[in-house]
Image 1 (cartoon, rainbow, N blue to C red):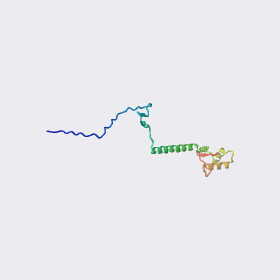
Image 2: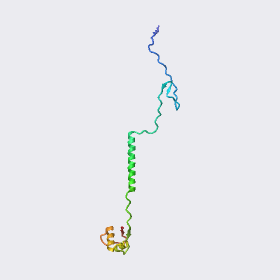
Image 3: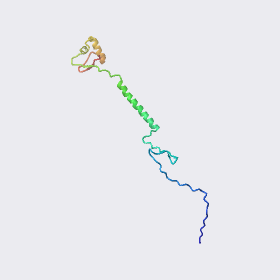
Image 4: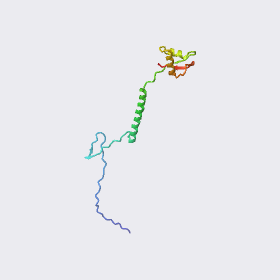
Length: 138
């Protein structure tokens, strides 16, 4: 045979109040407190790209490189204009250096004209050949 014993223990722990779910208004018309209890507003999540310190340094470096390259291109564009083209003549069969020089510089004496053509073309003699190209600086 079995016996069941029941002891009555006095309850010293107060019963916990039941938590209840509350409806919280959202949107533009939401108030700052619900039933007198201040509520924290939810912060919307940030959408987009967040730059770290390394990313900012990379963007600054890229901007500096772009500015330097564009400055170099502008400097080249504004550089001294290229030297004007020096006129030249091709020696025809039977022509001499004196004839070419006198035709190119009629205002000078023949000796001065020949010297000018020799210096411009680095010639050591009076010999020229048919088809040779001589530059005639002004």
